[in-house]
Length: 171
Image 1 (cartoon, rainbow, N blue to C red):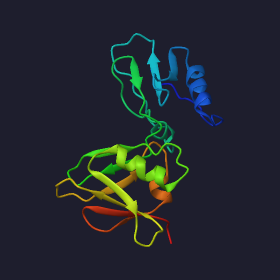
Image 2: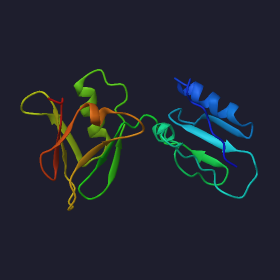
Image 3: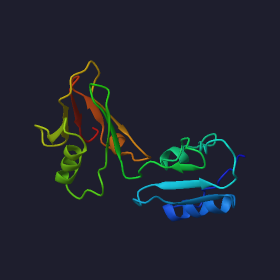
């Protein structure tokens, strides 16, 4: 069974959940237990797994953390509060929850708290953040947007070497 959900007027998470619930009476969407993501339950009674995908030309499901396949009739959406995906040199992907930072110190603290191998400090010019990775691996440290957040894009991630990235304003 395929159900298309119209999110055109859904400008809050509450309205997204309401739109999913109104799209088909056999679908029940709600905030998860941590109140940081959307869970969807399918009551059709089929034997397959519940899958949510983006419609052509839309990335809404990805941005909402629900573009995935659940287990059986339940899909647990990703946290909507993880803002950055930092890939360490050893290939580990660390999700960083910036929260609602009001200072640069809040951003530095969030990066430090995300993984023991990440360090962050104000850069030498005082206009950006240097992020370093202490893992050993052949990959490069990279920073990407996550769950529809544009923090990595808004603050350009500029390569400085395999173990360090500079994160600061675009020029």
